[in-house]
Length: 217
Image (cartoon, rainbow, N blue to C red; front, side, top):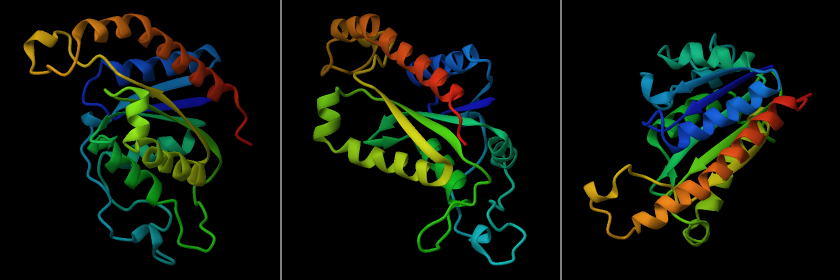
């Protein structure tokens, strides 16, 4: 069992990365081999619409033709049993690095057949961990859930299954006094970080353990 996680945050030791690490700890507890990749360490761009992955009889049919840092990553993903993505929410959606990664990862396997089909060589389980500065009620009011639900739908279509974990009202700064952030109560943020974030970490651990023991079929 091989489990890969992808950090779409520029920070390697904060909310998103921590939750991904906990998910991998959960997978490891089930005997899985794990790997965490920080997307901001890689050099790549989003889909360039060359359509080589859609060209009949082409040597890159069903595979991204762009040769950059994602090329070897995609090969490893095809060998994986579980893929877990993680991203902070920026302006209501995932980070730019994560969005570009998702374009490149999933578009190569999607066909324009009717009904749509996936060219990914097998079925695997996927998960998505989202971290955001807003509370749950604001996420719903602002329509985040509907937009982020599209990610789960496409992941399920391409890979076979998907689930999501949401972490709300996150602790953004180590010292709120050094930034202009008057809309937030530092004490409430610190209290939530101390009391709620550990529970989110437990949920991430459980996600990793659950996905690692599933049989994708």
